[in-house]
Length: 168
Image (cartoon, rainbow, N blue to C red; front, side, top):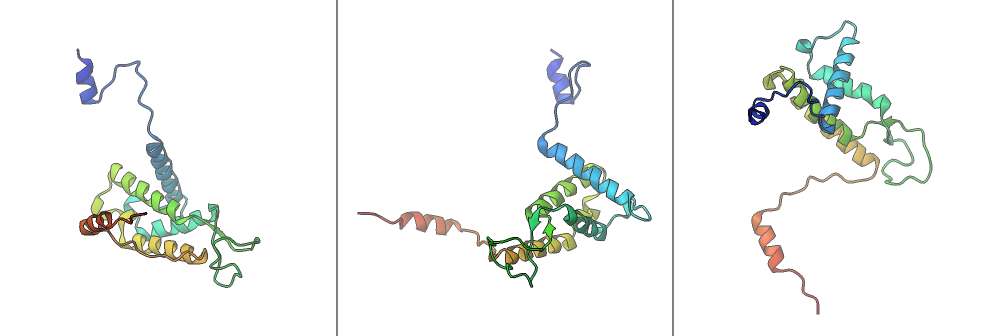
């Protein structure tokens, strides 16, 4: 009878194991701990209250050394080729999608750990600009043109279904 009340209030009986966090929640916690360790290892150490977008940008650049995505430099003979025929000496970097997902998790973790959305360094325009530049740079290095997708309007959807090709 009290079980429903316990579930609503978020309590559990002593003996019930705590729920297993989702993969996303586990990754977010690992990312948050890694970023906190990075700040503590700075000389001098940086507290979370002192953290700004410059610290986040430095962290993203630091992570590049652990990347697994080949990003061809402009002087490389394979620059702009989606599938190079041979190896080269260009560096490995973090893939744009990985960085984008990381920033999303850290942005959420910052606020969950008491940070204000107004001062969230992961939500700053400098971070958005950096991510856009990384995306464009990596797309050019692989020869993939980056084009912003146009949003379909309701009218486009209606007209495209009305003029569906007919095969005889």
